[in-house]
Length: 255
Image (cartoon, rainbow, N blue to C red; front, side, top):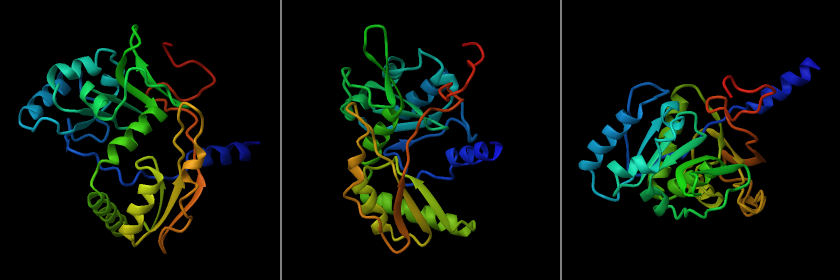
């Protein structure tokens, strides 16, 4: 029994990376930490300063931590007050929630009546208005829509840079959790990149309000290039313990 549990745990935490993850516009850092956790005041100060010297309409993005995600005031209304003319996307360093301002929601055509996809949700205030936070598959849908606006050659070059860095570090095989781009674009970008390392693309169907949407990968062939193949299918069944969405047998402390 212990052996079975060990295998299940190892399988649930499979080794993977997120390739072609190149946000458009200006990506800024609030600290040198790999797990940044700026306060709302620090974040708004940075957005105000960067927005003042960046052309309107330019995407602005940064990584944040629980100080923002756990603060109900750190949502689209606060962001709109300092960057009304720039779409803003605040990603978390662990990758499961995101916070957008009104310009970003509009640019991605996410309306207040947007329906939650299976396995994901949009946070709403008491009146039903979107706050700008999205979790799990709702967040991954935003990833796709945003990253798919990145120019094709930028994505291809980013993949090549990644592969060269991996090879220099002795990594010769990579599994990509394909949440960044839609299936057709994923295949085209990896085909054109012709990566020198072995790459396994894992099918990641993006659920919608109607269901699991498995068919979206049906038209992508299993062999992309001589070194890049498509196999398997992956689902995300819960969140992470960072934001308290990982499934557990007992309540999180204080909840």
